[in-house]
Image (cartoon, rainbow, N blue to C red):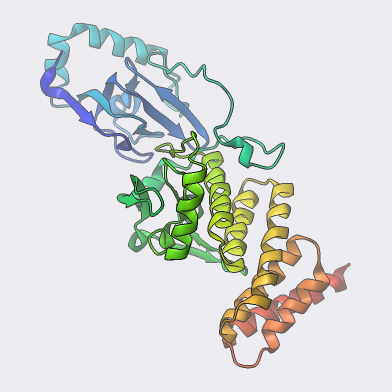
Length: 368
């Protein structure tokens, strides 16, 4: 084996992303690599060859590859290709066999003949009992390109003290594409909602990433008492390229944590609101409406139980109006928008936003 050309890569390493110029071919020697293009993905083990078509056609990769485990590969480049093939003619044979079987040059379909991982596993989703009855299994994965906007940081669980890697966003790289009326920010090529929750793999303490180390001592005490009484045996770890099902499970784990630590109504409402956005993106209308009902319920509680600035109240009224529209409650939506538009003090921008939504509702009524 061409030892000098072997490379070791840690779990989570991206070998290449879609659109990168192909400069290497990878023979997988140990471990598992995920090849992915949009919603399509394939797990590949020892014997797999990656990047060969794009490399020999001198073009850009049309799929991405990331290490699901620690991986060893033999990396071929333009500089070492001939010397490796002279000493390892079997590799040349395998590569030629792979290239001979692929689709025509103008095709961009992922096809692998060797090293496809055996995925004969139990179809049960870990922790699925936390999800509503009949909840579908959303197997779509976050795009590999999301890794360009993430970095890993070591996190210490405030409940059990376990250290684990958490995904943190490189906010300086994010580019805003759109601000929606419900205050959702859409970024180019990235969805922050998929990385909102950190989960301890040991005690399953799940909490929003930005607040993970800021939880109050009272909440820590309640969490530790619960964990000591209910240690549990299940664990949870995101895949390198996490699935939407894992993301949704992290939110339901956070809902369970909120119940244990006695989170505020506004925390509950905001978490359900993000689930509204996720289910909308997945076109799961029934689940979106259920999440919207819960979010609206907790925002209504927040309005009566906690105090905010006039601007904060305006934001909540606008969000409650948008949630009411999703639930076909135009009358309630009108009242919430009116409260935001006519509030004494507050932010003039929010008054205009609310007034614009009132006009939209009036136009909708006139067209019916």
